[in-house]
Length: 178
Image 1 (cartoon, rainbow, N blue to C red):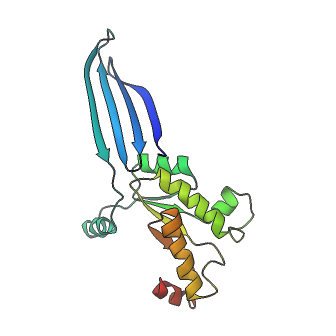
Image 2: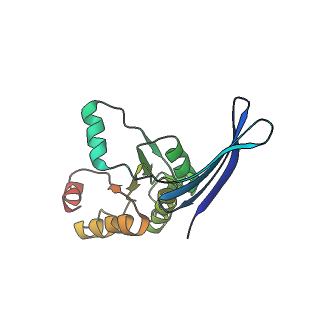
């Protein structure tokens, strides 16, 4: 089912709070046991929670209220999880991964396949933040049709919520096409 099991012990003052969770897709099953200092269990609970993706309309509302919108770059499942746990609103899967993860001297060598793989990993880890995939060089410059086809791949194959492209002039027609 593609679940991720998490288990651990937490302390609150002199009381141990033992917690475990199993995540299956967007649903998390929590088992929580409040343990007395002498080791006897006081309370046990099981509950389900679904963590929805932040809606684009919520970002608009945050802007209207003047609330800060927090964004970070992530390149893999662990950094996506960390961004999620830290309460990020947006996570960018940047083509800078070509340099920071893949060891290239520029972002130009990043391929669609590499960026799709990295985006898939981040979207599995970042459940609440909006995930934005950076379209790599060559994936949108040739034509509006290429730009649209590759943007659809990010959304369909990698579960990205949005795509980012850079440029001006000819790139403006790509934005309109998307």
